[in-house]
Image (spheres, one colour):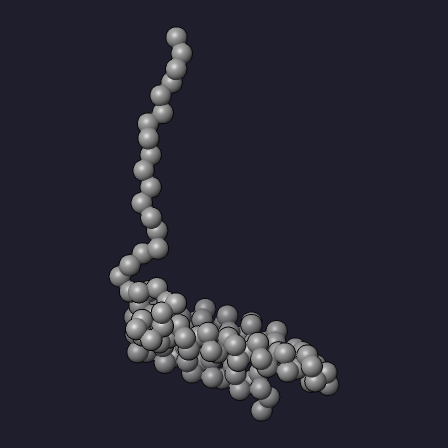
Length: 107
């Protein structure tokens, strides 16, 4: 099994684990992975799998990129205490904006 294929299977496992344990609560179907998650991994890892295996440098770079996606998914699946770069649950990133009424000057 190639490195990209092994990374893709690990990614599928992480997505399933993350969703079944409730680590990503903004899904519309509680507890089950959305099929779009799997389609996205199919597209990303499919493109990485198109790299020819004869070119050692390119195949190593594709494998490195594939495993980087897996590590990023794993870091996002960790609890907020272990993932300082993640957004804490229950908070929003938006800031309130205020508008001022416009005054017309004229006579």
